[in-house]
Image (cartoon, rainbow, N blue to C red):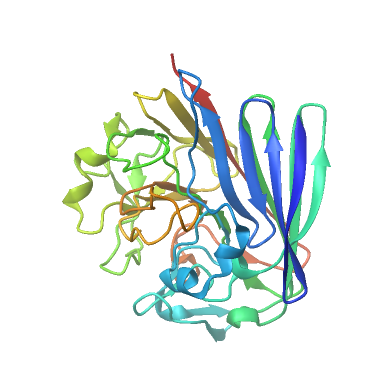
Length: 350
C-alpha cells in the first residue's frame, strides 16, 4: 500500500496536486482541484490494465473554460447541492434564497464556480490496510447563493480489498441545504461505449420527473418500465427508449443511513466488475448522453469521451428535495454534522 504525490505547478498561487493511491492491484488518482477522482486503473481477467473511469492526466484540464462550459463534472465532488433545484429557489425559516439558473430553467450541481472548481486542502493518509487522502474546503456564507459558512471534508481511501471508500463530513454555522456526491463516469471496458455493460440494482422505486429532470414529488415502482434493473440488463438494451438516455433518480431499497448495496455493474468480456454501496437514500443513474467526444485523457488521445462513453452512479438525496417536504430532508443546521459514506468495490470475474 503506498501513496504518491505529484505537483503540476500552480494556478493563481494554488498548487495543483495529484495523489496516486496504490494497493498493488488497483491505482486511484485524486486531485485537489474539485476533490476529483482522475483515474482508476485495474486489470481485466487476462491481466490487461485499463483505466475504468473518465478523467484527465493533467489536473489543470479540469479548470479549462471550454471544459467547464460543458458541465461534465468528470469525477468531481459536487456541491453544495448535487442534481437540480427547481427554478433555483428554496426557502429556509421563511426566507427565500435564489441560486444560479444554469440548467434550462433550473439550478444544477451547485452552479458554475462550485465545488468542482475549488482548490481543496489535502492531507495524506497511510494505514496498514489502506492509503488515502483527506480533502477539506471551507465555503463562505452566501457563496453561490447558499447560506452558511460550510466546512466540508471528503476522504478517499483505497483498501486492500480493492474498495474505494468516499466519506463525507460537513458542518455549517447557519441553517443551509446540502447534497453532496461524486460524479465519476465509469467504463469497465476502458474505452468505447457502455451499451454492453450489465447492471443490477437494489432499487425497486424511482422518482418520476418532468422534461427538465425535476421530480413531481411521487415515488413509483420501476416494474414494467425501462428503468427496471432489479433483474440484470445491459445498459444498451433499453437506453434509447429515453431521448437523452438514462438520467434518473432511483430510491435505494433498505434503510437510508445504513451502508448497503445499491447497484453493481460488470463487463463480461473483460471480467471487470464494480459494486456500489452507499448510506444515501438514492442515486442518479446517468448514461452520459451529453458527452460530446471533444475530450480525452490527454489532448492527443485517440480514445475520446464519446456520448454513452461512461455511466454514473451518483449517491445522493433526491433532486429538488428542498421544495419537496415529502422527500428526505437536505437541511443542515448549526451543531449538526452531515455524514455520508459511498463505496465503489472493484473485482474481476473469471
